[in-house]
View 1 (spheres, helix red, strand yellow):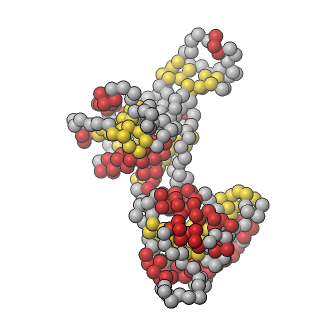
View 2 (cartoon, helix red, strand yellow):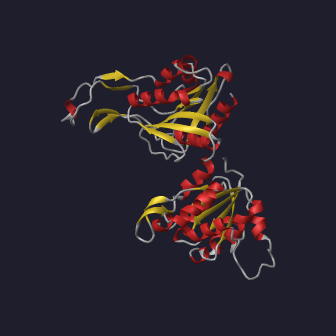
View 3 (spheres, helix red, strand yellow):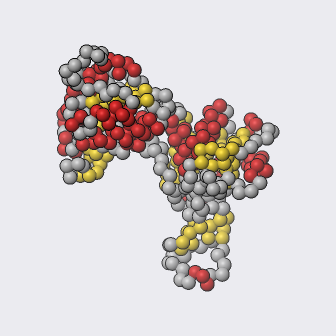
Length: 393
């Protein structure tokens, strides 16, 4: 679900994790959502309402003695919202929701909300695992409420267990990338590392940022995403089904195994063309004296998928060029048999490896006879253009 333009009501209940709701609010805003806030009286003891009013730009709905100016806020805010998420949600608030009790703003909004509801429990692991809490969670699930389970880890009380408030970015990912998946994208991301010995390898500078942006865009639009990931620095949402590999051989095997499930396959990873013929079992001593390193050709993963593609599958290739980009990319596209080719030039000072921007262009079979040009833009813009091209084909 694309959060851009969505109206999100954020309910905050009592607990030390309430301070993390500030970061969650900002992340939701950065992803294009408009956010308003309701708070229980207990929550205001941890974070003041002034903070959330300043961050959201709207008055916080709290319990006051004087409701003369906004007597129907418990109806107006839920009616305004597309999504209501309670984060963090205490055991007390879970009990109120399950019992249908409207004692304060957060539970009143829960009763009045007719749209999509989400709950993020956060509490001590003993409380979380208690029969009443688990019963209440099951009740909410049966009512169609989406539950984002807490993490395992170090809790505010000093103990360890399941009950920790998830990272705000992961909560935003669950909102944005959850839901039913009707189509499947298989994508390779990152780089491969071809071992010379236990400490040395042949590789490249790919960070995986472009592939991660593409994965997020397809997830956002309701696709299931299987990501075959080499080493990389980029972060993928948990909603991706990830297969971790190290070298070209293992990537080729993983892609071959997964390809029958895919409606589209994106070859975004920077795969080494060659690898050492032999891998030394121990570190090579005095490697400067090694005059020659014998190499063997790695599998051509793109060619293998094109040769074995079904009639309905779309194959997307990538071309990384540092000179004559348009000419070289056009030639590769014509020779490859891919349905779409993305060319990028990731060595400029303004963008490229490890950065958020890159110079790129896209060729497709539907427009293969037309000239195309390169444009400088964000990797998110590249991902959006690619998604629109794949979904319209």
